[in-house]
Length: 227
Image 1 (cartoon, rainbow, N blue to C red):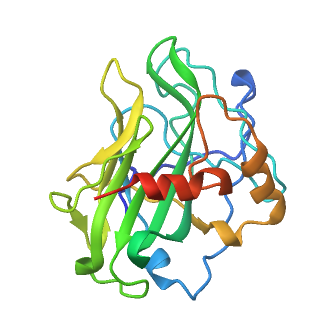
Image 2: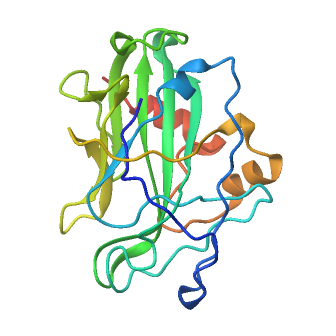
């Protein structure tokens, strides 16, 4: 139930000239007991900047990111990517699905920005099992530390809300609503990640970017996504 990024193809080789350590996409399937996650992955429309990359591999190696120099998508314009999903429960017993993406850098302008970016979308559902479009209560894209929830005005592709990743200068990148269909990435559920990958995401310092679905941030992010 998220947005889409233009489908890209990517070489699995590390970008050595840019000293970027790439993690290979994980292909573990989300558990079948939560079918909505598999049926409503959010497509994301890339307006500018990097495409999504894997943030971690099965061995717990995390991406080294890229320095915010050169073109805003320099060294990060092509990847199979990865989208991470975690299920939670909020006030009133409502079900939330948080979908998250990793980007090697957040660079609105040459030399401006920071290494690493984590962004996401929280989708609130009336039922934890229904996959009908009417089951969506709110769509909450991440933007500069906030979750901007919309109960109307979002566009669906099938049962998936459409999300854009963009920078509106002079601000750095964030997620937002769009009517343009983008591309999708391999989906993996938090609890399907190997322990090494989970531990790496819990402990790695991504600088100005914070993993939104790790244990120390997940519950607070859901609490802030109000509507």
